[in-house]
Every structure is written in structure tokens, then in C-alpha cells.
Length: 246
Image (cartoon, rainbow, N blue to C red; front, top):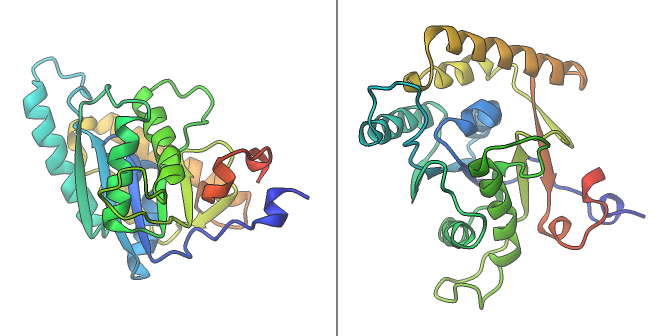
């Protein structure tokens, strides 16, 4: 017997309230935008949390950090609105400096306890060859937060809260797939709002890549276009030798 037989994983759309952690302002649209649009259309409540200020993400030599932070936040807010996000929170960590667990975990636990979601989304920190520490540390800390968010002696000033499951996006070991055929046009329109991150050429490249990738994922699972996720419960995140294969 393994965990999947003993403890089934909930379906990704079975929650009512979600908190989505993204290391940078466009990550959730890139890798989970179709799901977020689908959740919003179904009347689910989505809170989006941008972990860093985006102060480094440009190749424009005339840009300043201060200007870029303002531009990124404006783009992020407009894209969030287009995705149906009901609340958008921003944490004060600097781009490229998101801590590994510790302070980041504590910030996430505070948000989880305040927002009381049924489910959490974050990038998969076990993604092979991922070199960006903000992505890795966002994912590690989100997983870490599910260990601590229901423990009353951790940050005792806030009452504990149980999260049913975490869904990792940007994963190479997915166990659930979401049909985004009807949402893809709106997802790509939202991505195009991040004008500071693209030239016309790189935006077209991004759109073509996402179209090909979602078609490839979908074709393997009886869908025209799809996004992939690794969904686990908190019990799968501690002393489990089976979670890699669920």
C-alpha cells in the first residue's frame, strides 16, 4: 500500500477558497492562469500573493529599480483583475532575495491564517534544473507553511488554520491536469499586460510556447489545451516516501 491508496489527493477544483503564492508578478499567469480563470468563473475566491517587488527583472539599461517596482505592481494589479482575483497582496521582499523558509514561511503562515484558504498554490521547489532561488524558496516556504499553519504554538498571536491541499504549478511531476481550452485566450491576454517584461518578439515567443506546451500536456490527457499540477495534502509533505510517485 502507498499513500495514494491510503490518503487520496483532493481534486484541484474541490476547494472554495485559494491563496496563490507567486515569486514574481507574472508567474501565476504563466503557469496557472487557465486554472485561476476557471476558478473565478466557478465562483471560487482567489487571493494572489506576490512575494517580491520585481526590482531586477529588466534588461533595459535606462530603467531604475524604483520605477520598475511601480510599473510591475501596476501591471500585476491589472493582470490580477483580468484573472478574476478577488484580493491581491504584496510582500516586501526584494527581487532575487526571497529567503529560504524562515522569514518567508512566517509571512506565508500569517497570510494563510488571515485568509483561511482551503488550498494553496505555489511553484514546485522540486523542479529539476530550476536555478532561480526566488522560485525555489517560494515553493519550499509554501510547503513549509503547511507544516506549521495549524500548530498553535507557531506564531501564537494568530489562531491556527488547516489547509486541505497544496497544488504546485511549474512542475515536472504532475498528478492532475486542468482543461484550459476555454480560458487560454483570456490567459494570454492577461500575460500580455506585463508589457515591461516583453518586447513584441518575446511576447509572441511566450504565446507560441504556452500554446504548444498546453497542447502537448492536453493531448496526453484527452484535452485540447491543459495545465499540469502536483497536488498533495499536508500529510504527503512530511516523512512520506511515496509522494514523489503520487
